[in-house]
Length: 498
Image (cartoon, rainbow, N blue to C red; front, side, top):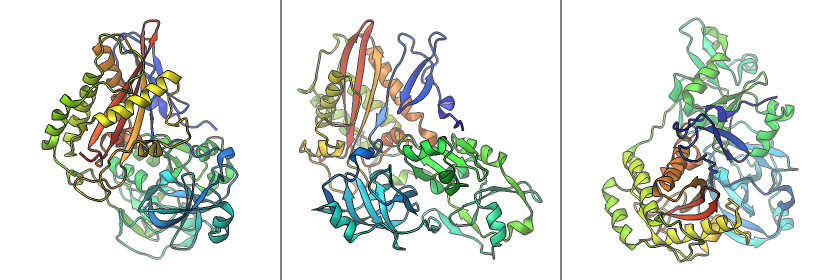
């Protein structure tokens, strides 16, 4: 089976130049962009906001294990595995979006969690919002003895944070078995569309595109790239288990797909596209039959300025910090004679702060500490010609930054602290000539790519608007080419004590 290709629906970064197209690759996907006016863009952009693939099979079940004490909430509905690995493990249960879980153990960023119903299994860390977790050294045998994975897939309650019940009628089990996972159209009225959620067996009114987008966020089941590959190749067992569900590629950019109960798979580019696609593949239903299915209402969650932790008036702090910024001692290689990397930092923060001001989010300060760490990592990538978040000593990105001894704000100490993440890293590269215009264009291309993820609320897009950040720094490396430079960029964001 050929999966729908989201690349064909991406917006162009720039429309000037000749007719020869160029491509940007992200985790093996190909996105077609119009060319730059001077050089063919070849940017490659990654994010560690949601880290890359979990450990490969050869790295799974690696010592040391840790026993854990703490809690977490499920960011996106996810399969619970019987071992800390994507490959060669079985799915025991589904952890629903928004569920509160106990954290029992950890193995190389896989977490063993327990649901309220007792189901216990391993989940990759990107699917969790972790609370305060304490870890103690242990080993595989001890963890497996004390906390054996268990539990069959269970029906999840409706997400309490986003739905409220409006009516409750006696549902016909035979009717539900035929319509679960389908979009139903009220053919005796005006063609109103309803989605029957396979987990709750309730119907939700799909009023329009924004409602369809909220359904993608609320009911979407996060899947790893390993499971997505199985769906793409037509794995009958997995598709049968997920029929009628909306799945999200959370290890990429959150692309959404509707797995129709008939086995077809449809790419949902955004809310309006989801609305049209799902209506186009619906079933007609009479008012009498519709009344047999319990109805619930989905509450839209618009972005609100009330989520702000500061006001745009604090932008003076970012401006005043410019005078203290210098070229980092960690800068690798030679900077082209006509390019000013400090001015490029100023250019980037002015763009980001303008976007954040529109939403009432706190303004970022340009911080030398992040300029230093970003310069160090950009230099490593440039020297080794390896665009990666993987540190050579095996540390994760957060372990690497923790070793730098930076003073981060205290979690939950609002309005100045952070709530869900204290640091993240984006990386990118593009071509430029020896001019500030060329270098700024490379930054513009990167930002355009990030903002292009708005419809799917992708990880780079979330980084731009993340409320926890108060500081940013950008690092660069320039490698000479035949007609210019390959410009490698690292962007470090976080919540620093200032």
